[in-house]
Image (cartoon, rainbow over all chains, first blue to last red; front, side, top):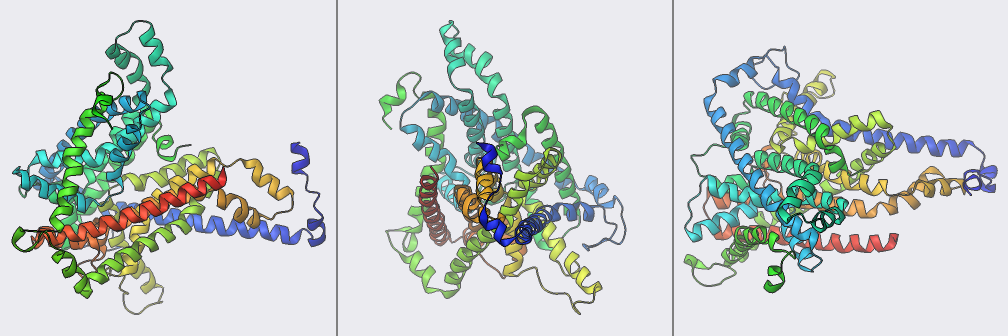
Length: 287
Length: 282
């Protein structure tokens, strides 16, 4: 069957000759490739430009830099506020991720094992923060905490981050669980294992890739968040993305380029590590 | 969702902690937000005061229209540019696929602040574009790119384009390659095969991409606030100014509600379209 499909016996082609067909093919390739490479350039340009700028030896922000040095990176060492901000962000992201994983994984187990209609509603509820404006969520949560009389603190900040980061954990873990099916869990239970034994010895090791990727994305989302953080952190707590945002907005501080450089390096490194352990790209691209 | 159902063993009580957490810290705050937007003078009674105030000021209406336009424009541009990127990715051989994966996903995982900063360096007065154009003698004076609508458009397209590329890649990878082969062996040219076969079959991917890009664009705060500066205001910036700087929370809540409505209506329309397009395929 395939041989008859591949052979082109069409009379149209004979009439119009081979040239238009070639032209058709070449023009398609050229247009597609051209736009695609333009797109890739667009996607990567800002990160590359920032990396180059971060090694500049100029006192102000200019491109291309007149020369190269490590002065902006070394200036980060004498910038104690920055270290405090980075530590705060790290701490918040870490706690957020841990809570997201615990809440998310247990919810996924329940959603997986049940066929009730509540699963659809739960899924929509958990996923919806992804599409809703962070500024609106932040304002709503700020008003809510003010209403119930809770002062803004690291606690309120972490609570708000959990809401916006859980979707990543649930999406990846649920995909992993669905792929796995329930037969192994049933077999384990049928052989007399307790639910907790089954979870820790059978299910968890098998869904570890999904948990890791979900946790990774939750961590990054929390660490980079500005919109919600602006509304829910108290004035005394300095967070890294907010600090960078105001550094860039107010006086185009070149030190921000060095921080960006560090962040890009760390992200790329983490991506490579994640790829080793749980094929991050498969989870992101899905093929 | 019945309580008794939830309490049955194995049917869902493990989801309860997250469900309660989200009801308490997500659903209720959203309701508080909407309720605040209807607060009258001095915090008492229900009124539409904040909404009439919003629509009576032409500056605010312009902000609303600009935000909506920006959402549509970024969605269209990232579709036009993102589709070929997804196509290139699908056709790429093994080694290149790895590199392309890295190039597409790294921007997705680097913070929006960092990427926006990159655009500041590219578009600034002493930035890449102006330096290049000046040296080539194409312009006499630096052109203004920062603090313009188009500058924000370019930066936001870069920030959210991966969200368009990924669903299209997923859609493209589900197409049976024999379909295109069949079309071409029957005399359909490459362009015709693309427009008649491949493109319609990827509609679900494009629609879910468009949904994400639109919602994320109109909700963007960091990029418009940096590239747009103080003059170019979009709804999220307006919410921030009113809510945090001017401490006019009922008004900020009304603006938030309008933004939420914009996002939800668009999501509903695109979800319905997506369902129809999927029915068309199967």
